Length: 340
Image (spheres, rainbow, N blue to C red):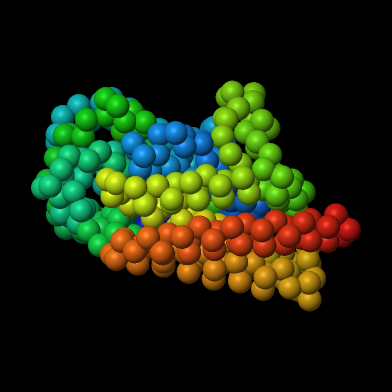
């Protein structure tokens, strides 16, 4: 009795709301034209006045307001109310197994206190999502962040997952339904949209509020967009110098992933005739990716040494990266305007 659905390491793992659906899509290259037409704009809600108290920030790829139920045309998403699906404890295992048998990945909201591979296991009650993509005998197979902070596969006994689901308090959780299922939509088609790419690159360069484009779905989101998010990130990282000590690598990690996605996108555009490779844009963005990777490594070193000089070096490096990216984006858009 074993069944597993395809799973792969995605291009973005900084936050699980990206990692889980992309772990499914990355198994099929057909999704790439959609992916390279998106994942360009950056966003930060600018809650800077609360950083010393909260010690975290939502520096992220911009996501439109309906992203929870319309992530990608290649992914069928259903939000289910946990209380309507599970009338009793004994309903959980058969339901998840049936979903997997029909090709659905299952994302329940769980209490990680009961997940052996979680850093919260038997330490604290932490309500979070996990992704189940298979089963084998009396265990489910899932993926998520493990005790070492790695995005990795894990096994969990049926009884442990039952506890984790039933004892997850969804009262204040943003995903109040408590259950989401995904299925790859192989019949869908999305062509690479160079005009959308050009539009988003312009938003990125000039820090335009991209949420204005989706105001029929929801009111626009205030905050910093595009290159203006660098100042938010610098402000956040500077807060590491003040007590009490707190650390969150995710914003810097997202910045690094953003640059790597840009490199892959530009290579795709070069390979498909949207840009001439001799312009060297993918190579130049590769240098930005290496520099943001070094920033990330300096921050991880700071976590261990608490050496304030590392933060000052990071802030200086980010200023240089932002200026280099501004010039690079201006040149890139000039070339695109001349060729489209």
